[in-house]
Length: 160
Figure 1: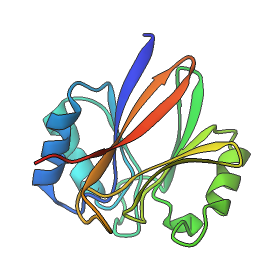
Figure 2: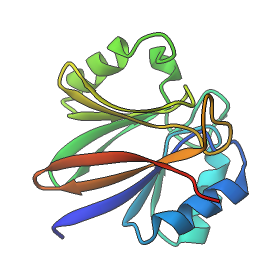
Figure 3: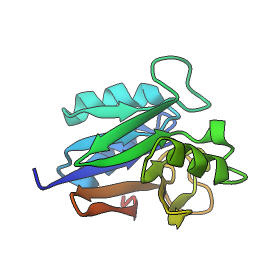
Figure 4: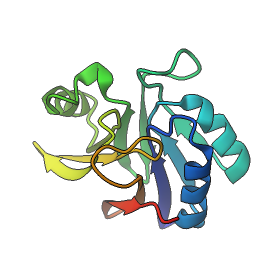
């Protein structure tokens, strides 16, 4: 496979209509990442989408998932975390240090309910924002294309 399309969700907080809309709007994807708050949604999303959903637990989740995952796609390592354990509401330094320690070139996180695509200390950062309870704007999700050449993320506003 030359490239993978990944839908990245976070902070869905049981807003089923929003994540169903995101699934439809995203179109065909190869995989879904759910970055916590509410991982219970992840099982329903996997059932609905009929594809693999990798999820991590957030500060509103209890059991059922790991606090973080390190995934490798087409030779690229990506750290998945909700972000609350790294204090991302205040600084992304600790998250970037963790990604560096794990030799990840990217870190995907949630928790702030605010979308972000940026580089910091050479680490690609993606926060898809929140589908369930956005702060300061519309509901958003992430779309990521991963190829051998790199990781190409974007934030998408939910339509409808």
